[in-house]
Image (cartoon, rainbow, N blue to C red; front, side, top):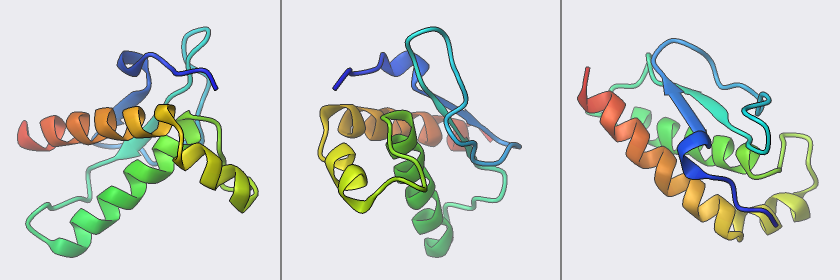
Length: 99
């Protein structure tokens, strides 16, 4: 499986909804994660953000909402997913800290 450059893997923004892996620069996929409604002092919001980041990471690495469970499991075990999730968490933390 192709590992995507992490600098182009995620666009974390404060106002838009989670997008289903829109086409990024040639050779890269990315996902948008909404942060506007997240308050990290609330445990439920922290869990919601983690779920969004996991879903976006799966999407950026090739699995979609309609993908078979086995496909999602395979993607979740890939280096692409692990690297993308780390990058997404780092990016989200930075955006939330800057508010």
